[in-house]
Image (cartoon, rainbow, N blue to C red; front, side, top):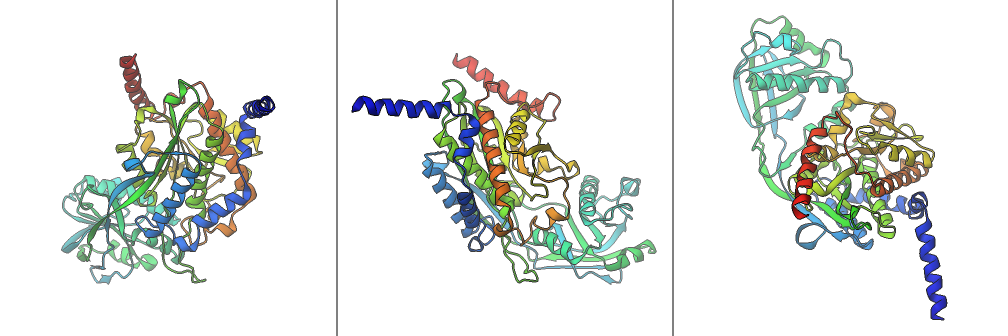
Length: 497
């Protein structure tokens, strides 16, 4: 009897061993499980998973318990799955008031704010181009400009243009920048939910932004037109009521050891952020909860599915799973982790981040950085295995590679693409859900998500089992950082040998 049992066990083991990575990737993914996981983390009861909220703590506990269920080893503080991230919350101003000559502002967006009380002269510099600033002494002055450029039409382009104006004004010593702009109500509400809410930063960062930058909504650009005709600009400008409080939030961190005696010393990071933007202004249907199903419950569950798969079928390289807090507040969780890693960064050879805004093409997956490392062919092959096409960033003007948690690892030198739902352009279909109360679990295409998840798991398996160590494509802007990081690793190994 014992011999028969041993033979059956041996045959079962050989059957598992003979499975391809594609078969293993498929075997642990269930549409019903994906739905139940997404419906929980994107439920109204979690109130949009605002960083620092009790609801985000519930989400963290759910993620930690799921990792524990799959025998993932805790890598956080004091033997737990949690890495505490100390933060500070800076309240929104109680009041912003602004008078420019005889025009009184009523509606504002506070990009960078601090308590300020200014009364005096200001300088109007048209659109605030480099040519407009040329030859002007703006040190210590308050600068007023029109939003965007003469060519920009849409609101996003106007806001993007403001970044370079702010950088220029600040570099020349100006004290504040006020942009006069006009946007529709929906666009204003979307941006106000971010800019006019309390801000969050890591504890110990600069106390306040030394430079003030706001938008004043200028209907019909009437105020800007009056300034075009003015020879002097008098301003009465006040921001008041900003206060700061300390709190902490959590990254969730765990690992699985690889199966190969040598390659297990190399880790691949599988990461996603699990926070979202909380509760905002009600829409026409009186919905005020930003559930964030796409952004980024899908990414979170993608990583949990990899953990489940690797627990059943270990890969040659080890796996580190990190679910970040505070991404929506400025990549705070990943910024903190990159400076306070739970495991040595030089052991991390790849970071496969998963983050999403939405999708408009269910035949594709979008990879920010697909061709920036030597692992792109695995991602393409995995997508093809499930009738998907992997494409590189279709909207480079959005600089999306550097706007998710992966960038904090890229800066350290770790090859770090971001795996995302398929889209061809950052268009109205994306904006319909991106940071909107409409980003709910009941309007997702779960048949597409099954293929999306399978592709991510298979990509992860192929990368984790490849005898070739992942690295940047030569010439990439993070290539030299990678050379420096892994030089330290090679030096450490040489000393140990």
